Image 1 (cartoon, rainbow, N blue to C red):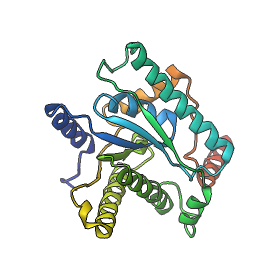
Image 2: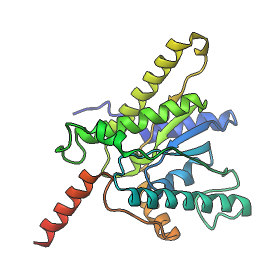
Image 3: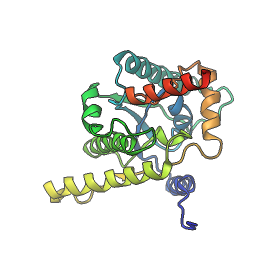
Length: 244
């Protein structure tokens, strides 16, 4: 039995307590996979950070699906920013400290994911192919965070009950380590700046439940597969098996 299992949710809370004591609002680059998963994460984080959503998801291998998800993400952010403009949060777990949210979308290149997944096509969901996907997306998030001088980055993916928070936090922390080493090796004069991965397990403390409530509230499109063609095929097989 592992008695040293980390509680990422508590680690995040401790970080936030430190920021509040210092009256600080660090810049956070939040990798977002979709609007439903973002909903609770943004509601929570916007009180303590200056948040920019980073929509980098080449794993969504159907362009129509990608476009649908990114437009829903933008619509959700617009709703949250409207609340700030109006000073009305409609009974949500937010207050006047909530700040506006920005979004950064990069080019949609599904080949990036297909190259990363090569050789792992037959892995089941949650296996080595998914880890490669996490590495691809979080390495890029770390790179952008460093280049644009965000103090922190993290991902909405830990809100999903189907995603392993231990793996995601491990991948995120490794992404931060790699980019800091790479950038300071190229330019030792940059040693004073470090980007840090913000630990999270957003599903905890009813985070996942809250995301469902917010999805219903805003009428968000909720997909039933992660995004790639492999996960969609597995979900279709599962549906067929249940119906037989």
